[in-house]
Image (cartoon, rainbow, N blue to C red; front, top):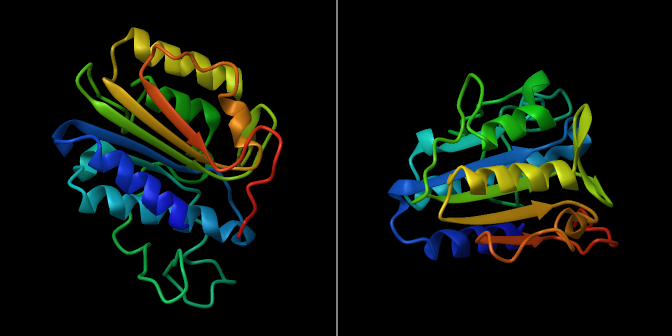
Length: 205
């Protein structure tokens, strides 16, 4: 949890003027046992806002089944650390339930389809934050997987369409290093960092 805070703040502070910043934040899981993913993403949402990124330029994916879950002892609230603030309050979720899919995520990145999508330009700075489970060569969604090569092709497409000037990607998932290891080009101005290397668990805590 501290890592996501530090990396997000560092990414934003390095970007300068926040008016042309965009963020795509994804909690790729569902079920109360995955509480931490949606809590972390709502936490990231508030960091974006506090650092001046307009709400209309922040796109959030979350299954939306935790805050009101019968197992939640504090109904309607989410916390990403003990004695922390309620990060669910004010967290605007754009894609919920069955819309939290790899295909919808890739469409948003490419600026395609209906609903809220990236409308970034060659002058924009884009931040992507994904929190969920993973395995070698993939990250998980509630009902499917996003494979490293498909993600890679989407990033290349964004580059060819001049959808960013700089991009920072943070993936918190097991074996998340495998999403970039050996395939991310050095000349497309993307900084990617992960919670684990290609062969290790990222651990829940």
